[in-house]
Length: 250
Length: 215
Image 1 (cartoon, helix red, strand yellow):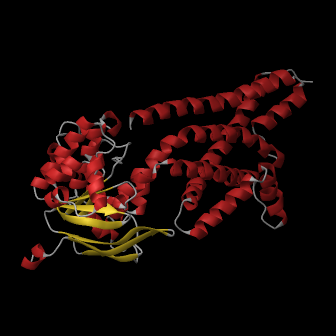
Image 2 (spheres, chains in turn cyan, blue):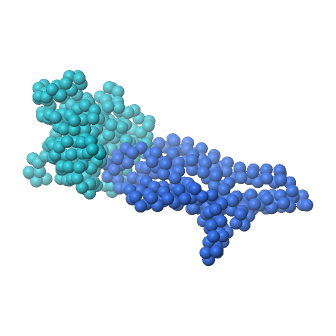
């Protein structure tokens, strides 16, 4: 890595516009994420948070602006660098989306063997490694439906981690879980943050965001309404929309 | 008039062999064609989708009887004299392909969309997504309707008698003409059909159970 690439933001979102028909879901959204930073995206339902993550991961094409992520550029023209993007960007969904017909181990090794062309044995070693990282080292042979929601979500995180991404995106990963299961998933994410993983998370867990995130992005009506260091955002919201949101979320 | 005897039973069993052979041709040919049609129906390319949809609509709206007439008598007038087995096999393949294609399209589309997205985000290519993620899940959903349709095809092979094919139903008719014991003959014919179809439904239940465990 050249010295200046460390200083350059790992993710740069500039003036991104996303339309669903005539509806502007993202309206000139811009922000940057440095290596090792954790950014929490907060806001009401319908503010465009999930869409933003989907655009960054390349699942949605954008109608304006540009997204540069780990050196890959996602423009308005489509998904040409999709494969390369997948190698560097991991995403975890609200609904886990594990493959129900495969064991936990195969869920994780699938992309390692098919996409990264690793030998089966090496892939299994990696799977065992990431699973113990999320505290499920003993559930290799289980099928997803035999696991609790929290365990499934941790497997989903492990599945992403196995591909050693540079950035992880989390899309409301705990909103389908009860408080106890939420805690075990958040713990895994906190560990990841401590290990220096660059993360962008859409979350409704205000307490967690406040405790762990470096930067908070408040979205409102498809725009970045307010953003800044976490403490400032929570302690001293400048806009009335954010103030109301924080009050209602607490 | 001849008394119904063991020779007749043997005759029926030999004819049943043809019913089974025609069914197998229809399953295998229909499965290959059906899979191609199902994939074309969910393809990203509009031309493939339109072509497959058109084909399925035409076949689903045409009696198998007419397809048989066309491939046997129609083609012979056009100068292609097909062997009855070829004509029957071709017609049954065209027919079951259209139905299986539509059944399987539904099963592919029944796999939740996020499964596509999750596998896409892991970097899997389109073919890899199909073979490792989507089709295995679609197969489980597809077992009951597919087996149901297979039993239907077994019974539909009786239609090939009109192009001169002596399969089970036709053989029954022939024997009945000689022995004039319709109740006995056709009850036996029905029992043989049942004996062919019943294992299918048993296999279906077994398969479903196995797939259910492995998920």
